[in-house]
Length: 461
Ligand code: NAI
Figure (cartoon, rainbow, N blue to C red):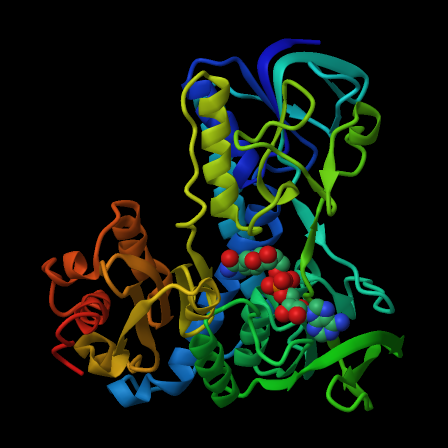
């Protein structure tokens, strides 16, 4: 048994960042984690391994489609999936190992095992109970289940199983046209699988800007992915290591079936709070999530919650920001997260990124706005990289020119979006971005051109 100022349960991006910040602020800190390695879903079986697979499959695609156009001749590479998975695991290991190093450097104790909270101020791991003035729950989320779909992680897989396939499937059916479905669907499509995405809504990436949804769908179709929109999956059956997926088209209630070697279930995630003892403690919940106040406190004094277990987008960087902010709050500082400026990125090719409001949201709010758009076809760097597909769309207040949101589909979108995030944090107008010198030739010039388009007009469009 040991005494701490703070014990954090869960070492994903929310938990480990919170632990490091607590220690930096002089608090005696421990982090409880039951996995063999630190980093949670994101580093072990989520963001990091999927990005490794996206990177490898994208380079394969580049080699087989664009190399000869650039005078790079010779035999195209072939796919060795086990070797690719080794590369993926290496990048996971170096990242999880990095967190272990940071824990040691910052003197954060890693309590190995799964924790529960017998009462406020106490955390039990195995046979030992530790005391802590403050407890932060950062236990993340798990794939949501879908009635009639039984996951065996072999034929019917979640993202975890999809990152461990022993061979590229001939036919893959993805249930859910959200972020996970489109990222992993893209990976296997590029590696040669015939991928069909079945999505309940009439558009992919529900909640995204409408123009982005339409153009993104077109680009993915051009890449060979197939889509069944407005269709609800009602079940899967497995026979001889192959699956049949049943679905109903919403417009006419007609029943359909499709066969697949692999089915990826990607219909969302749910907060993971099992076995923490929250019921007995009387921690208030709301729609399966832990209810928190404006400072990440639960209704039980001394117990806080951050990341996927509370409201808001289930994103690693949102959890990280909350981790830092709650640490600062516990240390007596003024922790703050600006929920209006949390970017979202889909790491497909091209990438899709957004921050702030969509046109649809502004219409609903009745707010007057202007739109500035710029196509990557007008960006010299993008064109020379065969990456002229897509556009930047900036949305500003019609009267003040203040930036309200940006939506990007195109090369490096996930990096470019941060220019707008910083601008929004400073309450900038599009003119501020438009008057900022951008190096030529860079992809970032497209951001400036979209800002110019909010005023007197873009130069290269
Ligand atoms: P999601 O919520 O993004 O998409 C799920 C999709 O499944 C929705 O479009 C929904 O309409 C559809 N759906 C639900 N029931 C269905 C049914 N019966 N038949 C057909 N379609 C159905 O969830 P996803 O992709 O599983 O991701 C989970 C979480 O992880 C999300 O919050 C996401 O933001 C996060 N994530 C973020 C990443 C990133 O930032 N790049 C990468 C991977 C995950």
